[in-house]
Image (cartoon, rainbow, N blue to C red; front, side):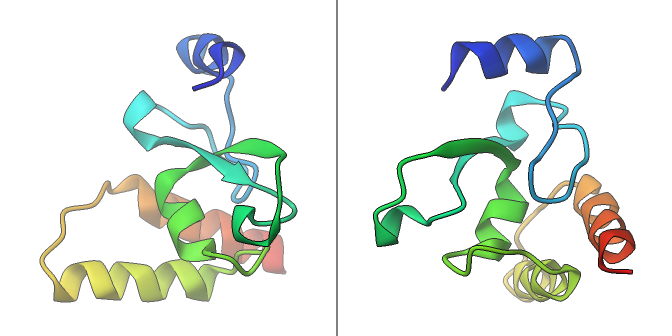
Amino acid sequence: MNKRWLALLHDKELCCHLCGLLILSRRQLTADHSPIPRSKGGKEVLPAHRWCDEAQADKGFLRASDLERLVKAWKKHHVKFPVEVYDSIAALKEKER
């Protein structure tokens, strides 16, 4: 993981580039290949929440509905997920307005 990101995470200043909210722990942090997905040759990485990155998949963008579908799948399979996911959904809905 990028050392600069970890320092920002420690200072509570690291934000998800997809939903715009703070990343609160190292477990929430992932490196998103953006704007071009790694599967399509992208090399640039930006910090993101794991759930935002997973919901975005290889589309190159993320909508609140994508994250809501992911939550439904998690619930169906009894996967535990952080409550902060709902904050990301609300932030994405606000961005979509």
